[in-house]
Image (cartoon, rainbow, N blue to C red; front, side, top):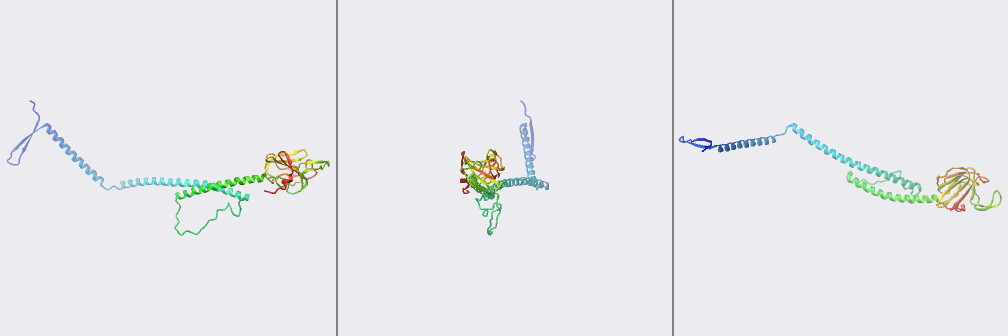
Length: 317
């Protein structure tokens, strides 16, 4: 039989000097050794933990405090920069909207000024070159500055009101423009600034032959070189010499209505010009078949002549 390796441990008692022998095999010895190592390791870990806890509980050094607060200060700077950028973005957005509103206000002022100049609005009631007069007693309550949301709401409300006013003024401008156009095209008045009626519309004795002939217009005599003016707005369709008429200007007023101004000394317009009522077309002369300075004035509707005196006697609109 094989014999196992054994370890003998002699135990000596305090009394009577007696001893005992304890036999341990190798397995038991190894187990005891492992238990001892485990106890030593546990004791070391416990000591490390206690030391680490003490290290954590100690007061930080000055350099550690400086590093900590530098880090905190850096974080706050980044946060402050973000807030400043956000505020700047809001200010930029409000500034942009205020710029747009200013441009729209300038257009409204221009429209209002046009109404004043056209007589639709009394100039002594509305002066669009000056700010509106406002005022009132000072409030006894402490005044607070507006916040960004308050300003945004005020701008929104102002934009809504401006949009409504713009639509109203635009409609009024269209009505005014249409009325002005109708007034411009309304044929009335004499084609001269000074002179007299020297020959009427219809049959007359021809000044050169003495025979009874048809006169398709009226003659208005005046001073040589005086102004010949358009009796309505229109487009110049003829501005040159024509047989019998001398220097002739013809103006188309639309809706089949045309006027002619003959025998002029000098023509002041050219074909294609857009002329207004009262604009000088030519200077009075005696070119063509004429006996002296005058303007031969004709009114033609849809290709047929009409009596110009009917339009000359019209009341202004």
